Amino acid sequence: MGTGEGAVRLRPPRNAPARRAAGWWRARWLLLTAAPVAVLGVLGALITPARFWLLLPAAVLAAVGLLCAALLPVWWFRTHRWEVTGDAVYVRTGVFLRKWRIAPMSRIQTVDTVRGPLEQLFGLATVTVTTASAKGAVRIAGLAHETAAELAGQLTRLTRNTPGDAT
Image (cartoon, rainbow, N blue to C red):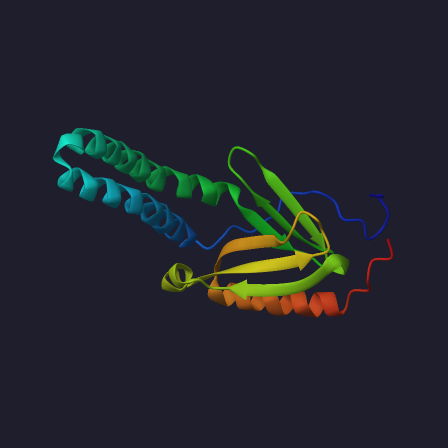
């Protein structure tokens, strides 16, 4: 990319997810962990000869799940960032492997707002910005649903007023 006027540059996005996103991530982690722990626990209760070999992994999985549910959402909240400027949508995600995505306004094709059942419970939404990129859509997760609706409207207005990319 050039350094001329209108060039999009990699820079740290300014906005964090909504504070309650940590609770949403925690609930997702606990639900993901609870299913196999419950299956192992029921099987351990029903199959006496294998009880130890079923309940031991259930206990380990439960402990790891609780530890991850306590620590990871806090870490994710500190690392996930997003921002929209007149030129592009910037998103940074990842804990171990940092992923920076930039969607220039001229390349945006659609903007979607999604609210799954758990997101609705926490009053959150995810904005998905689809571009012509082979890497797929840019997702901004953990937004307050009001913020997501405003952002979708803002992106729609910005992309409508942005001329297409000639490259």
